[in-house]
Length: 249
Ligand code: F6R
Image (cartoon, rainbow, N blue to C red; front, side, top):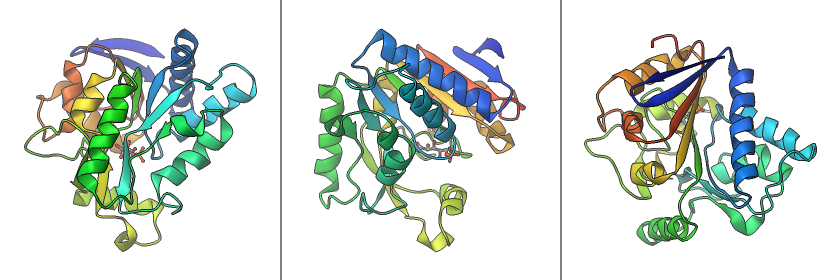
């Protein structure tokens, strides 16, 4: 493990996915030890699966207690029911919530079914604010540089909003579906503004397919065309990336 600083970002370079997952779980554990009622911002996708497994193990071993933790997920497909196997609500139950003791009313995920999108997005933002915003935000990164589902665009979105998924994202996420046509075309996502309000951010990346996005995020200009680049402006951002994801730095 090697730590370097680049463009205001602390970069922890680890060997592989396992080491990334263990290191990320340790940071979450430390956050919850320091502040029992931490607000955790959570991501889905392949990247944090190992971290959730490590956290579930820590919970079983009585090393961490999530009783007072509040969780806010970054995003959800739209429209989708929370019962659908492809929903992020389902992902969170499978990979994390059913293995730990985060109370049900402290688990927040954008509502994939609410027809009044504006109202449900505003309600999500208000809930986030009422909770005091995120203490520790876990992020993955898309191969196109998206964070949450903030896709490359002409401007940065502030609050929770409905997004048309980019062709690249649909292709990348097709691996979770039987056929690419089944990938939802839209999603609800926390805005870049809300993500930037988090007190601490930890971004995880593993694998060669993330190397170019990581390079552009760390070394490129800050631009909404590569949403993750705005993280250069955050005051407490740590990347935990494996050798392959770091290979273009
Ligand atoms: C998911 C999310 C996305 C993913 C990104 C990477 O909640 O916020 O930004 O982190 O698409 O996905 P994986 O980890 O599957 O490569």
